[in-house]
Image 1 (cartoon, helix red, strand yellow):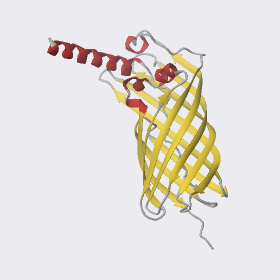
Image 2: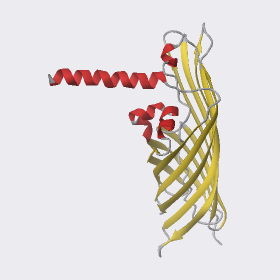
Image 3: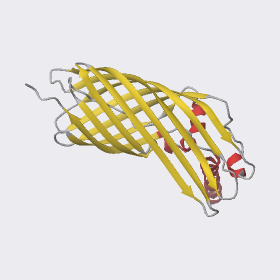
Length: 265
């Protein structure tokens, strides 16, 4: 009896996973969080990272401190996915985004190794998910979005190891949604939730731990975090359907960081 139940339950989960991943289109992916960890005036930081789970695939982050206690940051993300099928079709996803921000940082404690930082900013993005089909018009879903965020955090900095804990509160507004539907792709259109000329908005909390390890100016970087849908969570799960299974709610990325520091007199 138990064996039959477990088999039935496993088949049900497999069916749900197949329905979610094949029946919905992705229009949004979070980017890797930019945690500047600037220490003093003149610092300039460059980070490149690859998202392997829950965030965009390619991330570039810049940050600079033009004056003491004040930092600027900018980052871009490019995410792509392509899966080819045996019937001469190809599912192609492309997402681009760009953020800018400004904020305050200060060193704390007698050792001056602890840091408080808080950045606020906004960004823009666009996405397109569609199917290339040799003999039929191509079904396409695309959208644009802008986001506004606030990101407070604390960091522990050292010669060989830096670690920051940041919390990004991110509001996302999606607009110019274009959904081109065709009956020939029933697996694409069943219970289709995207409609042209509508808007979606949601708020996510993104707690993140960023670790930098190495000697000198060049360090390896690892980042682990979560995406927690809060306000209008159903809208976020709609535009990022893999999150229904929990996979898209965990973020992991890795890369390299190089920090230029002003020489002291």
